[in-house]
Image (cartoon, rainbow, N blue to C red; front, side):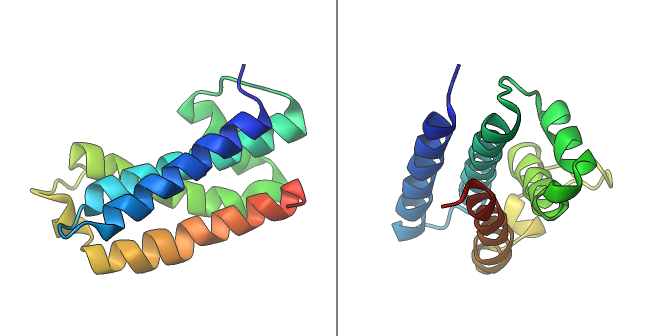
Length: 135
C-alpha cells in the first residue's frame, strides 16, 4: 500500500507535470485541471494515511470522509471543486448540473484555470494539508 511519503511524491510529480504543461506554447486547460485534481487527491490521501492509516479510498469514500470530518471541511470545499472541474475536463459534462460543453475552455478558459484552479483551490487545499501534516 502506498504510504504518506509515496502519496506526497506522486503529488510532487503531478506538480512537475503541471509546470511542464504551463510552459508549453499551447494551452492545455483541461489537462492542467485534471493533473491539479490528481495532485489534490494524493495530498488528501497522504493526510488520510497519516490520520487514519487507511488506504484504497474510492472517490466517493474519500469525498465522504472529507465532508464528514470537521477538521477537513476547508479541504473538502476545495477538493470538491477540483473534482468537479476535472470531471468536466474529462467528460465535458457537469454531473451535478447536467450542463454539457463542447470544449473545456467553454467552461473555464486558461486564465481562470491559472487563477481559480491553481492560484486558489489547489493552493488552499495544499496549504491546509501541509499544515495538518506539519510541513
